[in-house]
Each structure stands twice: as C-alpha cells, then as structure tokens.
Length: 238
Image (tube, rainbow, N blue to C red):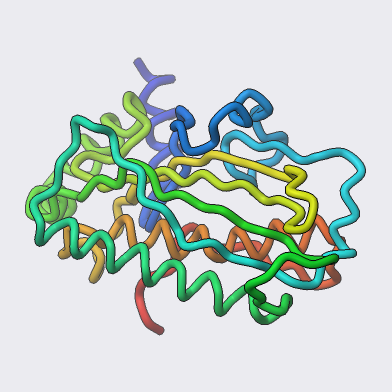
C-alpha cells in the first residue's frame, strides 16, 4: 500500500498541470491504407506513437512542401451535431493554417510536384470533446486531483478530457515514394485555464502541439542545427 501511495504521489509531481499528453496506444484508421503495416513503435519519447521512416532518405535534399488539405476521419458510430462539427472543422482549418505558416519558415510552400518537394498528407481522426463542466469541477473540487490521478493512472487519460488522433504520410511529391508515416493519439491534460472552459480546448492544445512536433521532426530528419522540441501543448497566451 505504501509503495502504491509513493508511486501515485510521484506521478502527481510528474503529471501536474500539463495541457496534453501522449496516450498509451493508437489504432491506425483506413487513412493510412496498406502503409499502416509499416508502422513500428517509436524509439524516442519525442516522436509519435507509431512511426515509419524510409531508410536512406536524404531529407536535407528537400526544400519545398506540398501540404494537402487536412482530412477529417471519424468513426461511423460518432456523430456530432451540426454546430459542433462546424467548430471542429474550424479547429482543423486553423491547424492547416498554423502548420503551413510554421513549415513556411523552413520550406517553400508549393502546389505542384517537382524535384526536392515533399508531399505531406494528414488526417485528424476521432476528435472527442471534453466535458468542460465536469472537467472544471474535478479540477477545483477538494481531493479531486488525487482521484483524477488514480483515474489517469488506470486509464491513461484524465477524467472528462478531450482527445484526438493524427495520422500522416510524407511522400516524394515527384515519385510518390513513401518516405515517412506515423500515427499518434493525445489526450487533454489536467490544467485549469482557458482551454478548460471550452469543449474543444483540449483538441486545440493537441493540434498546436502537433504543428510544432511536425516542424521539429522534419528538422531532426534533415539534421538541422537548431531543432526546438515542442512543449506539451501550447494554448494560453503569454
């Protein structure tokens, strides 16, 4: 009993006040098609859960990017009311704009295949809203943080938090060769802030994190000099 208490207390220190965290598992959707079989568990903590890199790819030889429109994939059993789907689409559109802007700092954004052009195809999968009313309640209620910690330890996800998965394929735009692919799933954190009071706030945090992670991983792949690791989700303005 004492060991369990110490373990939970240590986990509380490590997980307090984070805006999002990586889930324990992810199941690829049909978006990746047969390429999903190439995915393997990531070997580093700063990558997506499942990843594929083609050996021998000369990433530094690519200086342009075609960024396809971000697709929305949703399980057939999950249906959003029209107003919620509209808000979800706005988040995905914002993610597209944010990712384009961040990639443009290191790549020329183009529309046509040519030598030295990467094609990035991305899907946002099974976005789920947070129950913001209950999330706020459990965040501020006495003893709730400890109960939430136990729940997180058991399930891998804070109670009432939102979540979303992402899948991507990176191809040589001219040859269509698959150079990289991945699947990730993140869940909302336990912070109390602006995102706590909105149903899609956790998803917004996660999409912001993924835009930074994309830039970081491409920087690492091409052996960039100043690759900046993303934080665990950025939402609150400073």
